[in-house]
Amino acid sequence: MATEGGTKAVMAALLANLGIAVTKFVAWALTGASSMLAEAIHSVADSGNQVLLLVGGRRARQKATPEHPFGYGRVRYVFAFIVSIVLFSVGGLFALYEAFHKYEEIRDGHPNELLESSWWWIPIVVLTAAIVMESFSFRTAIRESDKVRGRRSWVQFVRRAKSPELPVILLEDLGALVGLVLALAGVSLSLVTENAYWDVAGTASIGVLLVVIAVILAIEMSSLLIGEGAVQEKADAIARAIAESDGVSRVIHMRTLYTGPEELLVAAKIGVSSTHTGDRIAAAIDDAEARIRVAVPEAVHIYLEPDLDRATAGRQAQPDR
Image (cartoon, rainbow, N blue to C red; front, top):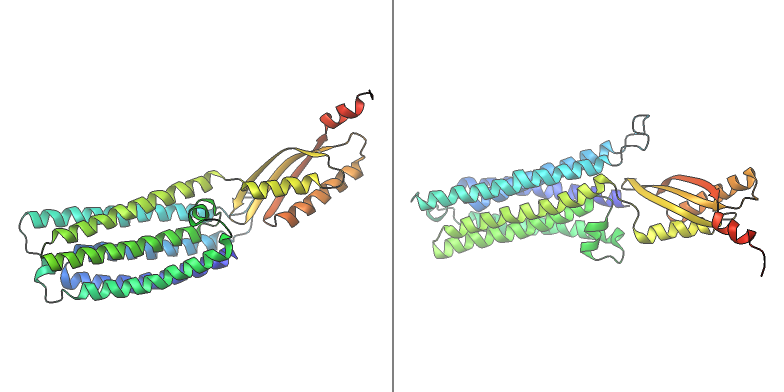
């Protein structure tokens, strides 16, 4: 469900951003407003990012090979990390550069196209329409995220989600909406006060916003790339499933790792009695694996190592007092 919802949210964002980018470029060409250029490049970067997420999702569906025995699920993390780099460089740094460039032009006394253009109203119309279209995209991302978010807060969802598409789209759409409001404020204040520095301030604010979002995405995606284990609730559910299995005395130790957004690896050493036969131990392992898959369906790679439960054996060997 997370994958399907993520793809739907990505497609909605891609279609919205492509249409918005074209209108922003037209508005910038007519007025020369730096906020419009920053927002146009922002939309282009977002569109490219959504294509990257779709490509990553497609490549992640490749079958496992001897070279990659656990499949290609983590490719989605790689492409999501690239998204953060694109957002930082193409979106954030370009907006900051454009703000600095526009500031120098105004300081040097160059005529301001926005204040002198007969098309001054175009950016207002375009940005207002873009806010409406971006709101529909953001609404789709929220609705799809709600299906898998559960009781977690939005911050917890972004930080703990293992599927990268929905958190990325949520942050991108939120950044896009805030960026549009900043651009609208910068352009409007420039027109009302006839002071083009407001346009520069709006552009710089967009750049700072995109850099912050890119850094947050990079931190979260790098954590997933390094390798994250199951959240505590799922780890506890797996441990209970093993401990409740017939023939297993306890879990000696356990490790979990996501090999992909919906694929969890479970490795555990389990305690068995020294009196158990090989058939009994094999049956205990089979039972434990079945219980784990019921408790946590995304546990697709399970490796259980039986070992003598020396703690239990020691207690059994002690004479009654």
